[in-house]
Amino acid sequence: MSSRTAWQALSRPGFLRSAWPWRAAGYLLASGVAGLLLSVGLLLCVTVAGVLAVVLVGLPLLAALALAGVPFAALERRLLRLVDDTSLSDPHRMPARPGLAAWLRTRYRERATWRELGHAVLAAFVLWPIDLVAVGFALVVPGQLLASPLLLALDGEQVNVLKVWQVDSPDTAAALAVAGAALLLALAYPLTALAAGRATLTRLLISPEGDEQRIGELVSSRARLVDAFEAQRRRIERDLHDGAQQRLVALAMTLGLARLDAPPGSPLAAQLAVAHREAGEVLAELRELINGIHPRVLTDRGLPDACADVADRSPVPVDVSFDLPGRLPPPVESAGYFAVSEALANLAKHSGARTARVDGRYAEGLLTIEVSDDGCGGADPAAGSGLTGLADRVSVLDGALTVSSPPGGPTLLRVEIPCIPIRRTGSA
Image 1 (cartoon, rainbow, N blue to C red):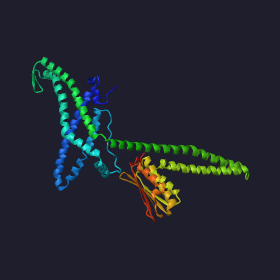
Image 2 (image 1 turned 180 degrees about the horizontal axis):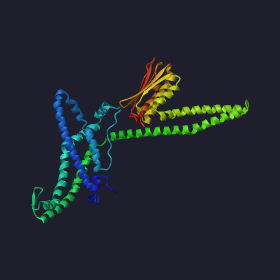
Image 3 (image 1 turned 90 degrees about the vertical axis):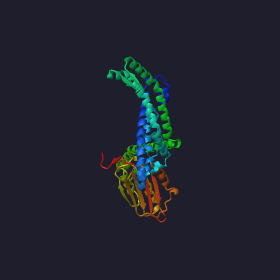
Image 4 (image 1 turned 120 degrees about the horizontal axis):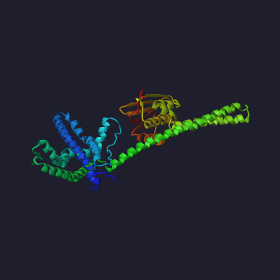
């Protein structure tokens, strides 16, 4: 059974023949160099910010230094794979809205950001000298001893080994090489133990806490459930559209042809007429059911055309206007469509509106849809209008639904969902 961590590798036979000692050396070397560069960068930034703070220009730079631990911790999570094959998840949450302001607001409020800043300061001013000294002693000293015969052969007379021994004899050089090999093997154990301890400390500082881990898992599982739910809806819609609906269309056509062949005014003709009418009503109900599950026009042509289609079927005249860069992720399009559909259904039943309008736009990573009418207002999400369920559906996508409906009207429903277009207009 292979080792997954440096700690496990230390207790396994064949450790010296494995890659773990070299992985440990590589981890300490990379961490040490990264810590050294971070130290130089932090000192330079603090100096510049301190000088510029006199004229207030340096204050934003000082505030930005609080986020220095975020990219450094991301690098450390990658370096940890050298000595620990178990994955370490990112503890940071996705901002509720797109944009730099939302990202900064989220990061400054997270405990993970401040833990990572503490880790960065520790690495920049305490850990990196230990890392580099350990690697240097474990590799440079045995390396010098091992290279003694080669250096003596190149010089021809004598070689100064480690600035300590003056070696002019091939036998002495060979003995030092043997000692160097033995020392290299012996130091592999403490070097790997140091790397494992360094990795454990880093994990304690930058790994997600219990609540953060659960939140991250919940967000991931929620996204998977949304994708699976939408995929299932599309599959059901496709099966009904291509299966049951086509059979009903064929049945209605067969009944219509049978009516033409039946004797006019006969009981058979009357029964066929009833059956033909029932088939047509069932077909209409099935089409409404399919539209309620996932309309085909939404899949084929996107959100603007789907909203225009539901507006055409509304008893209240509705103007529809969309300005989108292209197709959006299917869950976002579905949520936007059902928001418009529910809003138009509500205004047709309760608002008494004469006209309505649907406006959709995409800007700065945010889809915004507004449905307005000139009705009597007074929409109450708690009154069973379906707005509560709609708000839950939008919130699953980190979106927000707001309703303004004072008594006497007008009513404005706004849906905002952060997303990124998956296909731009005019792209293949």
